[in-house]
Length: 214
Image 1: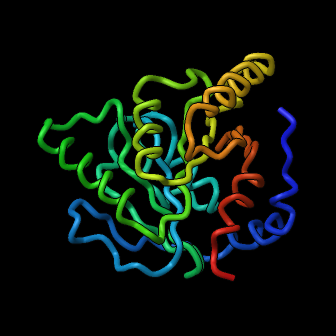
Image 2 (image 1 turned 90 degrees about the vertical axis):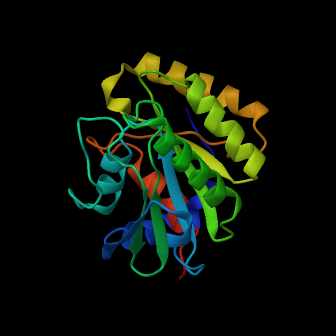
């Protein structure tokens, strides 16, 4: 799992500083017309409804309740925008896979997400979260295809890596990396993380920080 991180050397310290700064909730968006005007660069977090997106955002920012977490999958039902030090927007996207909602509402979410991905020039990268205990699932592959079609740069983040053994971690990491070869918009480096143990958080902060306004 050794990775070439030379491209992040200039952003390691910057990322550490950035994520100690104030992070504020801006708005939750359920309709296309409510999307914020273009301004600061944005990075978004996507993934299955039970992958731990909100926990990851909270862990990155050091704020336990910034993003709402729940034991009920599918609670994030809108695009949630957060301003990090007025230098970068963090966007928590609706989870996919287990959302308990009428089909009409799910269809509306899907339409909004597709529009957001294709029509947001300020969107710099999507961090696609995958549960390391399960690896890539069919709806993850579908999301990757959507990102490829939208020509949006995305990077895989394996979550809950502290929940599996080291040899299994290596296997999942390698298999996920190999799967990226068929996806043109995918970043080649897969990041292993744990919101509880903080594994990989410094790496992820550096990846995100390169897009922030200095």
